[in-house]
Amino acid sequence: MKVHLERTAVAVATATILVIGSILWRVDSQSRVELETANAHGQSDRAMLAIEHYRRAIRWSLPASAQRLEAVSALESIAAELETSGDPKGALLAWRSLSGGLASTRFVYSGPSNARENANDQIARLLAMDRSAEIDANLSETQLAADHRRLLSQKVSPDPWWGTLLLLGMTGWVGALVVLARRGFDSAGRFQWSSARGALWAALVGFVSFTLGLIFA
Image (cartoon, rainbow, N blue to C red; front, top):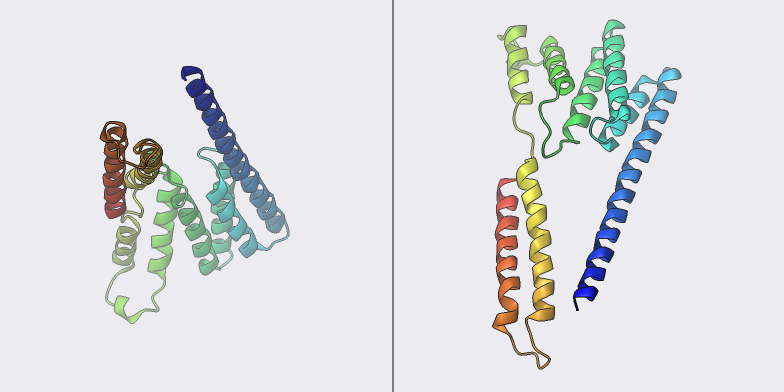
């Protein structure tokens, strides 16, 4: 029995490593493809297409990867060039793509991103320069920029911690129910409290974790 459990554990661990490895490989390779496509568009002076693919490269990238750093730098350069050439809307799109791309790749332990903070500063500044809305007529550019920056600083959902708790809780809940179905009943289908007790408690804990994550994420 012990040997069987050890073999099962090794098989599960191996399968888990293979799955995680394949996912990481897929993410990294897709980020490289998007970055190469963005660079090609940038060299052909197709700034809008380059911006879109740089944003995708960031969204696909792994934390602190070379692709992410290159895409961030490229979007910053494109934004500056577009604004200098008299295209503030294009520059705004580039800064928004940079901020949105970084926000979409947040990790549980991710700290503040200087690149995203700078992008939000530039977004607020460019939005404040647009005086087309009548509601903003009585506000100074400084006031408008501060208002936009405050909105950009609001918390982005879902919260990584609660989102992680939600996923772990759901996994534990479903897994415990599977164990309960296999070990909580005898061959005649009668419920066995002694065998089912652990699985029931695990299912309860998983359900509570899932519910809390669902509420607060």
